[in-house]
Length: 212
Image 1: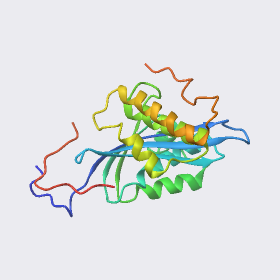
Image 2: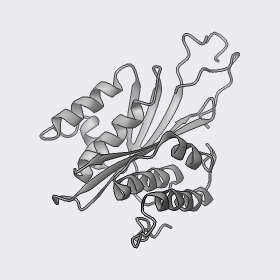
Image 3: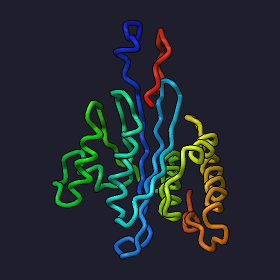
């Protein structure tokens, strides 16, 4: 019952799908990128994120993907974060000790402040729509060695809805290829070629304010 909830006390219900990619992982010429889909269930809004980290590792990209997604939220939220990285999930759940990448872990822990966060592992490339889209966003950022601008992310987000099905994955890939062609018109490598893929909403007596 949300009849006693006001805009001041309202807590958005958020789901985050985060993923990191690294081309040339472990080499001097590595390129790491992050991607995320952030869903505000009560307002049925979503935001996309795609950032380039520079040289790095896949593990580092997985940590930063979660941090960047959390930083999109402008008010305290109740959040489920899905990641296909057991390294991230087990560390944030307290099952792993932090032995390396401490600066990145500190950033992720700080990004969790004010929020109630639940961490859930998801198998990579298992066909879960929003995790697949997060993967594509991270891949294109790493491949282009550039994050996507707000306008570019907006053009992709028009293809994704809170209730999107598998068809959205192909539509997002096609749009990301179109955007990538602006950066690399003579592309010979497609970052998606190797892939072979097989109710939160509540009623309120007011319009829930956006989490973003």
